[in-house]
Length: 348
Image 1 (cartoon, rainbow, N blue to C red):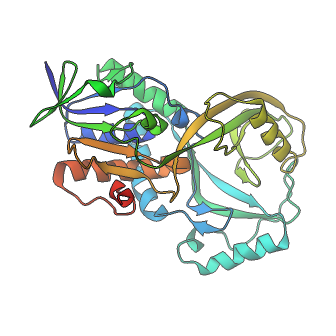
Image 2: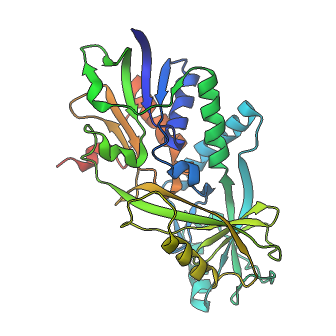
Image 3: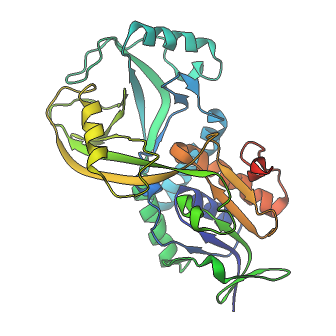
């Protein structure tokens, strides 16, 4: 029998952030990952404190960035690899009303610090923007694919990860621990993304699937070194390659790229850029989303040694580090879980 402090199921952004808490506290652990959920691997990885559709603040943006940015900086030093690419995000205005809404947002103290009062009136070759652009500050992109692949290799090299499916039916509850196969653990944390729907202990939580698809294009004539936000985003990757996305589909339950998704992106892109391009690749994943757009963390109401870390939605790179920290300190020290993220909010 092997004894560990934690079993962690799932290694997306949420699970990765939780492992960092375990390592910092010198806790022993084993991670189970079977590559069934790919939302973190295919995510755009953008962090942006403003919802540009409504010029409203992202929930807890200031607090999230205060934890997340140093977190990724620490990982860059740990692996001597660049994961965080900072850039300006430019919102392409579609009308004078769009501009007016931008300036009206300057009255919101939670939004104003991130918006540039002076409009960008430049013309960018190939970019459609008849009503100028607004600059959003403190934005950037985490290379989630590189980060997670690097981290998985790190865990495998240290024999901290098993690439296999976790079988929930094999959990045995004892008074002071939880047993799974030959493992004895003080706690099991489930960070399974949409895989939670097959978890009999937490499948009652109202997690919804939202399929997201992106394409990577090669556009030799496009000259932008910023993230362009319009009816979709166009994000520079280097060497005249750009990631374009994303779709939001709540009816397609598959995680495979679709022709419909590609066509939707191509149609929207016609309203954003006017230069020739070729599609290089297409990816898809299922985002774990919640109706109130808040994460779901907490302890099982009957099994106190089971915890859940899920529902990061489209802003996982911002939310992940802070909610992982909150859950860990709740389990270890009894720190109160933020009531807006606690799964207790779903109890009748």
